[in-house]
Length: 356
Image 1 (spheres, rainbow, N blue to C red):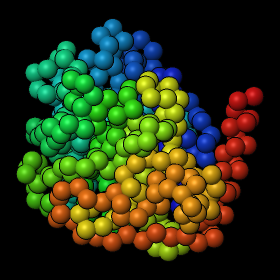
Image 2 (tube, rainbow, N blue to C red; image 1 turned 60 degrees about the vertical axis):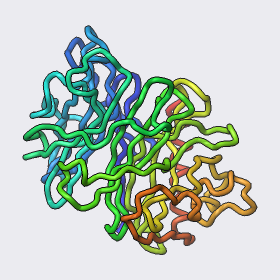
Image 3 (cartoon, rainbow, N blue to C red; image 1 turned 120 degrees about the horizontal axis):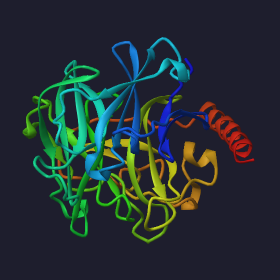
Image 4 (cartoon, rainbow, N blue to C red; image 1 turned 45 degrees about the vertical axis):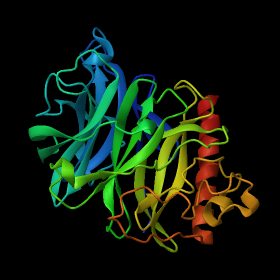
């Protein structure tokens, strides 16, 4: 069965949807309390309908006014790429009115929906030096109930850039067999080369109990230690792909070619491997991009594409939480190679037309 994944991104303040690198402008509100700094939109299929969750700010008040909002789309059996099928729903219901919130995502654990997001500590309204990961139960795709619970705060040295301790960009991550379940998140400053990803392991306890979450003391993915680009890999999204050798997880994340700033971010693709102790991505370093599609599929000969940075041995596994024990499968058949080649050809042609 052919798979189709929809990516959602932000471009110059507009919500966009990207399918095979075709960019469609969708939603650009003006003069509203949610018109400024539209960040991290996510497309979800929940309870038979499409939704986009996004962070937005009031231009009059700037970053401190960021809150989470929803766009409601068509039924899930219809294409999400029809502009007229979307409408602005409003704020994510049930979140604290006075808490800064960005990067919200929806996950399902034990058959229950939960909203997970990055927020400032309660009562903090101006200080941008600390972001934490919170979880709250949902009664529907648009409404939360109860109080948000903090499940991660920056408490490891690699989660800091200077005095700024940052946990953001939470995303659901599971092994193909479901034996390891958790959350990948980004940490340190996104404007620096220190930006990276780490993971929280769900032990199987109640998701609203902070003790049900264990943090790895070793990053999942960071920039290469030899000081070569790409820098700052972060805000990954993880999808289950039916590879020819069996199911496998691919991580899509952004990184930059410059050490500082947000300009020049590019989406990059990398497999996730699984070992005793949880997920790993190559040797834990981003590494240079593969020069050939066959290298991504089969592995780079002689380390010419940056060594272990893509397909992965178990060099990156070793964070200190050892509850997980699952095995993943790495596929490397010609069908996947041809599919990737065709995708690249289509994408290059569309980009050329778009730039003219």
